[in-house]
Image 1 (cartoon, one colour):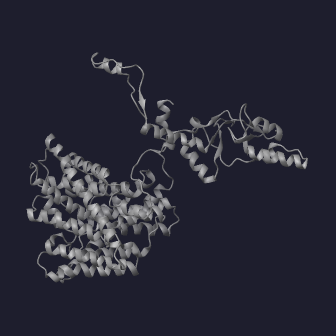
Image 2 (cartoon, rainbow, N blue to C red; image 1 turned 120 degrees about the vertical axis):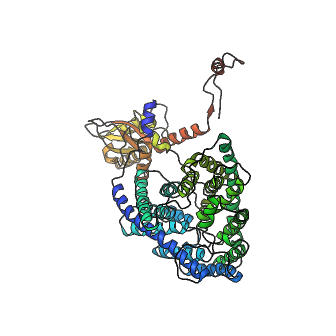
Image 3 (cartoon, rainbow, N blue to C red; image 1 turned 180 degrees about the vertical axis):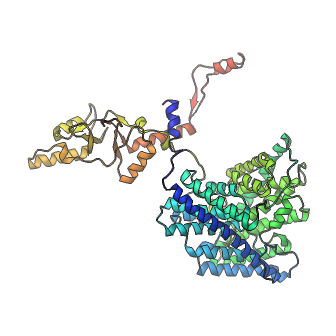
Length: 616
């Protein structure tokens, strides 16, 4: 095939805009505003519960649990919170268990993007209780589920397809994320990398619209500044520092692997307990309380601690305490099935490991290595390297750190992929019996045309042909009845295709005609053609039409003013695109002969054979 044809095929769908895209975008704008309000309400609710439990005051500011509380409060508050969450999950909705994103993914994959309305209420309340009583979790996972529930509920009230419901669900989830961290770009990337499972205008445009509205509303409600501002005006990295970012990324990736392993070993351990899962969050709360007695600053959302780590103001005891205690209590308690997000803890753990690296690595700017650690752990835990980079940049506004962050996040991502089959998000999905791919590539069926794989010059029958004549024409020389073309286009008197007939139908009709002594023609047994394909249709369109009409073969008709049959295409022909994709992935070959390589090298070296060697 010519390069021009392949290029044209590869871009056929790039500018396809669904007619309903603007309508869905309009609804997504409404969802974006609601997501911002929901994010603010959740943060205020977390602050209210924290102040009531630890300070006995009616105040909604997002304060840390603090350092000076009675031991019985530090130990007992998370246990009491776990008991309440267990009761809410058992008698309210089990969907409130977990950290939000796997539940949203599951709703998309298996539930037709339907979320029960009560989840929109119970999830933020349970998360506020969990975090407000000392749970070492973040607000972003619950707000993803809450924002997603808002979008899903609206979609369920409208007459929409499952894909359109998914778009509004993800719009709400991304809007809540953007409003929580003032991070619109990261929220869109998170939606693409974790929730949408596609990058298409029909979903991308509405999600961006929702995120934009949410970010504007967030600015009006909570301000527009970065959450953790870092001064990077004098940031200039050398090649040596960039190389050390690979090491920082590898260390962060190793910590991400260890934390992910701990989460699911804890989940396995809880599953072996001889009593109902309703009690598990209380046990997780006991683990949290014990950790809080050792390092109180590991409790709660911990935005103040993240700020200290990223601005280079964290002390060595704080770094060590967070790195050890926060990692342990977050991993173990998350395995208990309590309610809370993963991003804020991952930010804190990543910032701590980076700050620890900064104690021995060359100084760049305050908080530089903490930023590298944050991006690395996000890239390793969530398997979303670009999200890790953009999140760090939007949280700190340290835009000059883009390249070092990309290196660290990608190094951690690579290590995580090599050591773990799945991420902390997709492992839970896999344990529920679902297969989830996180690799994006061009659909091979979209890059091939029907004319490239069809059977050319097929046998075409006339409606006036007798059955004997038709059977004689359907067998090419040397063919057996079960070989070759099986579906035969039937044309009218003008030569235009109007029906199809199979060889089996011809044989059966011939037997009946002989038994009944009644002559018959092809027109008597042909059936109206259900699908007609064109030579410039893609194989993807052919596959969809085959699936929609339940057929395995169809005629191919020209686009000329006088239509004529130019071929037939069958289901096995679609495998041609898959085979081509498989060959490109696995077939290795040397394209330049060794003599050419030697000539390019100035005639040095031993001449090789002219034959091109290839191995599969």
